[in-house]
Length: 314
Image: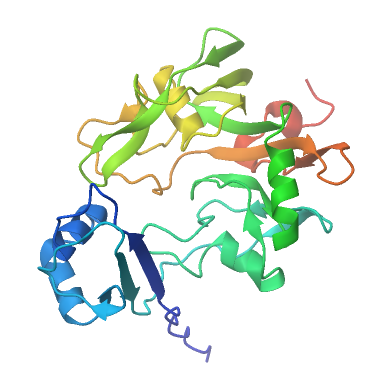
C-alpha cells in the first residue's frame, strides 16, 4: 500500500518589526496593528497581544498601550503551516557577481502577505547562497527571470549596474482584446489608492509616480493578444495596471480591470493567481566586466507565439 502523504510541517515562525513614526504616535498598540494588518480583526489582535506575541520596546505590550514616536513594536508570530507553492526553480546564469534564476508562477519572490515564509523563491535561493538578495521582485503569479546578488559584497555593484540606463526588462503577456496599433506606449502614473481588503493598493492614479511601458504586439489570437512589454520603470504590478489602463487587462486577472484600477466589487488580492505574465528577458551590463549580457527564460507554452511553437512554419 502507498504511504500516506506526510503532514505538512510548520515553518519557524517570523518576527515583524515596526518603528513607530510621528503619524502613528498616539495610537494604541491594538489600533496600530489592526490598521497596519487589516486582514486580522481588532479582536484577533487583542488575543495575540494578550498571548504575549507582541513586544513594545522588548516588553510585553498591552492592547491599550499608547505608542510614542521611535518606539519599536515587534510581533513574534508563532510557526504556521504555509499554503502549498511550487518549490522548484532553475539557475539561468551564475558567477561570483550575479545570479539569475527562473521563478515558477505561484511561488512568491519574498515573504509577505501573512502566509509565505519558507515557500518563497528567496528561501530556495538562500539554501545554496545564504547571503543572496534579490534586485527586484515578481508578483506571485508572474513567472520568469529574477536577478539576485549571490553575496553581500556583490549587492552594491549589481544594484548600480541594474539601475544603469540601457537596462531592459521585457515581459511576455496575454491581454484581452485586440489593440489597434502594433506598438504603443503607456505612461499612466501609478500610485496607491484606497482598497478596502488591504487599506491601500497600487493602481493607476493621477497622483502616482511616473511610469513607462512599451508594448509590442506579437500575435492576435482568438482569446486575446500576445504581447511583449518593455518596462523602463519598475512600479508594483506595472504591466497588469498599464495594460488594464489601456483597455486590455491581462487574461484571467482577478484584480485589475479597464482603467487600471480594481474591478468594481472586487475582494481579490495582488497575489491571487489566474493572469498570464512572464519575465522573458533581462538585459544589463555585467557589474564587473561592463559587458552587456542577456538573461532569458523561455515562456510557458500558453505564452508562446505560433512561430515559437512551430519553428520553420509560417
